[in-house]
Amino acid sequence: KVLAENDQLRKEADDLGPRAELDYWKKKLSKFHYLMEQLKSPDVKAVLGVLTAAKSKLLKKWRALDIRITDAANEAKDNVKYLYSLEKYYDPLYNSDPVSMLDAIPGLINAIKMIQSISQYYNTSEKISSLFVKVGVKQKKKYSQIFFCVV
Image (cartoon, rainbow, N blue to C red; front, side):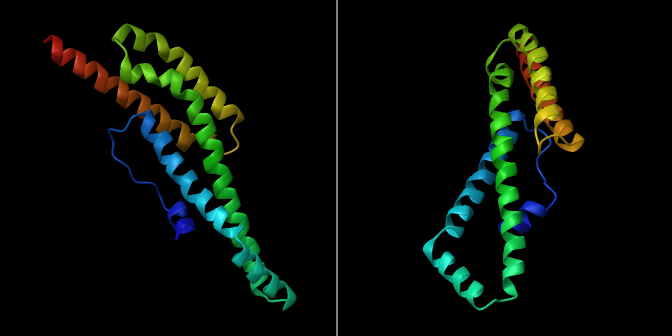
């Protein structure tokens, strides 16, 4: 079930900021961490031992599934690591005045570029574009709040 959810197209609201991206990957990491711990349990190891001893054809499917789970867990871990590194750059979008927020944008853009160039998983145009959209949405919300408070 967890892998099926992982393979599905992601649907989310249009008004989410960059924190939502970090929250999304943290939840995925938590799910996959739990799943990985279950796979290391003595019961699972015993079943694998029996399958190995019986030279079961299920082992091939098991190994393929294990690889998919490990890869998804590594993706979530990697993405959380890089998205956490952005936190200090996007925090002003949530907690600062317009001038401080604008001052933070160049650093945020450079940090996102860095992630795109070095991340093994978060380097697709879809993920980077989605992150930039979330930053833009948060900026727009902040400016709208300020504008409507002043007017």
